[in-house]
Length: 192
Image 1 (cartoon, rainbow, N blue to C red):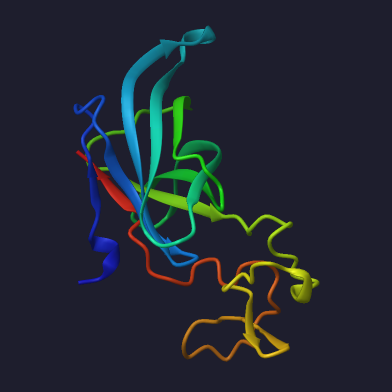
Image 2 (cartoon, rainbow, N blue to C red):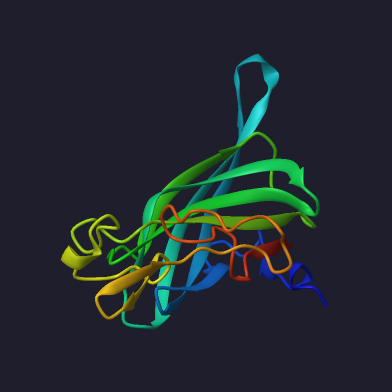
């Protein structure tokens, strides 16, 4: 069974209930992200069209690991069929060493409603550690080494770069935090 077939369930009728949409382990910390849909309103727009307003709360729960992960930025959602088997995308931003486990009363506006049977994929941006902790251009002066970027070997450092197994494409030059889509993470939900 491919991991794309294993999904969280979001029940639209379960308002004010925390429902999982994402799980990952980054910087040695396992965490999950939850959504609480508090209200859904259809609003008539000018010219006869309408849009749908979802008032939501988001929560990040750190479970294991020494580095605190936190939500950063405002989550947003889009409905588009750009990826096979995915109908909607939820975009969230996560930062290490960032204490913010909740984003409350976020208004998400969609032109079409979420419907039963849709697949929602949660995309996440994993931000780099704060510059005062990790300076990729000067690891000797960093109090923390980003494990997705560098490996220490005594006084020497090796940059980490990843590519898909079996690929003949050269390893990309590391920019920030390694491979964007490297680990397999639970990030898909089915709307019920």
